[in-house]
Length: 104
Image 1 (tube, rainbow, N blue to C red):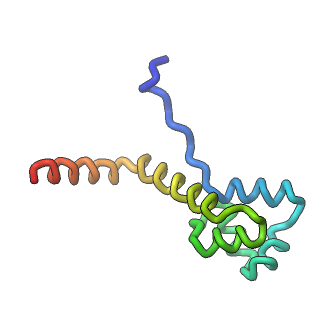
Image 2 (tube, rainbow, N blue to C red):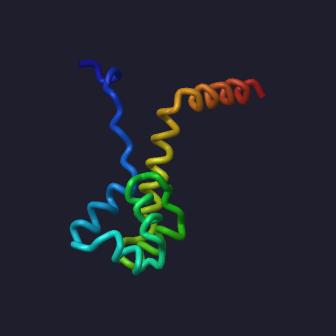
């Protein structure tokens, strides 16, 4: 198999890591949501990758779980970049911008 033909890995949303963390600690989403002062539905959206991690959410998780907020933000950034790179329309747009910028 030629390395260039490998399919890139599927990006991991930070919610997947959060789900594993709370399961490992033996706590429920309901309990964590209460500790964070947020609705269970909002935490569930984070855990299920339907909502992006913001600085505020990351800082709240740091306070509740002791996991540095930079960890969560870096995971979110990596996930968002990987998703953007998989978007062929966006990548074509970037290529066009680079062509125009090179002519300046």
